[in-house]
Image (cartoon, rainbow, N blue to C red; front, side):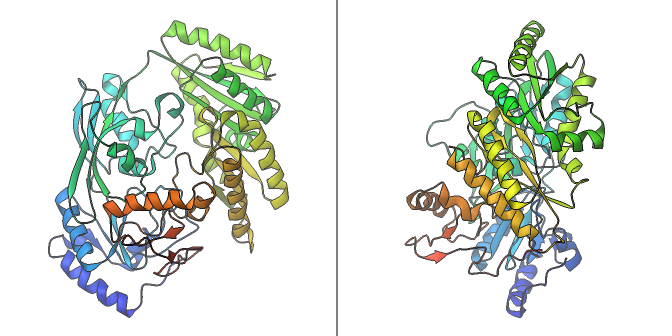
Length: 495
C-alpha cells in the first residue's frame, strides 16, 4: 500500500532541500522517486508505513556532517536508518522529515588481532564482522536472528542481543568505541581500542539510544577467540513449566551456557515442518542448551545438564557430536520466525524481558490471554536471560484482528513489568512501546531522560516521535503531548 506524498507547502520545502543537498551530493545519493521511497516506508515493524520527504545516502562522515548541518539550519527532521530490520518502528520515517540511510558505510576499516578488536563503518552487517575474522579463529559474539542483514550501527542504536548473549553479553558489552555525528554536525569519538576510559560512560549512554542522540558512523567492536569445543543439547519436555524450571535449575547450578533457547509446541511443529531439524514433535516445550569451553569441561557440563533435565522430567535428550549436528539443531530455532509465517497470514513479534524464575508463571498467563483474545501465540525466546519473543498470530485481512493483536501484545508487556521485568530486551522502544513507557518509568524518570536528549539535540530534530510518550520542549520541558501516534506533525499511517 502506497502512502500519499506531503502537501504543497511541505513539497516546496522539499524542493529547496533537494537543491541544496545536490550541491554537495551526487544526484544518485538523493532518493526522491516515489517508487524508490516506498522501500524506506517502514522498518521490520511493517504495521506502520510512511513515505519520507526524501532519502539521502551519504558515503562518508564528512557528508553526514554536511547533511545534518543543512537539516539543522532548515529545521528539517532526520531519521537515521541502518538495514531497516528494527522490529519496534525505530526507523519509521516522517512525512516532513528525511531518512539518512547508512547503507554505503559498508567497509571494515581495521582488523587488530593483537588488541582483539575490529574498527568498522556502521553499515557493515553483523555477520560480516565474524566472516572477516573467522580464518584466525575469532568471532563477534552478539548474534541477532537478523545477523545476516542487520547493520552494526543499527545494533548499537537498539543494543541488539542474540542467542549467545546470556554468556557473552549484548552489544553494549562488546563495543569499545564509537564515532558519531550530532544534529548540529559536530563529530565526536568515544572510546577506542583501549578497554576502559575515564569520565562519564557516554559509550554506554549512546548504546541503545535508538538514533535520538546522534548518527553512528563508525564502531570499534571487541572480537573473541572461538572456544575449542562447542556442543548443543536438544531437550524435550512435557510442559512449558518444566522447561522453565530446567532453565532456572541450570543457572542455579552455576552453569552459564553460551545460550539457552526455548520453543513451545506451536513453534516446534512449525520449525520442524519448515526445515526438518529433527525436533521431537511429541514435546510440548523444547530447550536448546549450547555449552562451550575446553572439551573436558564441556563433557562434564553436558552430564550435569542431562541430570538436571532428568529431574525436570525431560522426555528426550539429544547431544550434538559434531558441528554439522550442532548447526542442524540450531537451524530450526533460527528459522522459527519464517516458519511461523507459513502457518499464519501475519504475526506480531513481541519483545519483553522477565526474571528467569517467572518463566513458567508468565507462559501460563500468556496462554490465558491467548484464549481471551482468541489469537494463537507461539513462543520462541532467549530463556537463559528471560528475553521473551512471543509471536502473536493473526490475519490483517480480518477487520479488527490487527488492533486485537496489538492490544494482546501490550498486555504481554504489561505482564512482563508486573512480574519485575522490562519493556524490551533488545528490540527497543521505537513507536511500538512508546505509549507504554509510563507503566515502567515515572514522570520524573522520563523527564530526566529527555534532558539527556536535549543535551544532544536541543531542537528535537533527530528521530522525533520515538521512545517518549510525552514530548517536552527543551527550554522549559513544556506541555507538548503525544498520544496514540498524534504529534505536531502528521499522524503515523497504519496499513
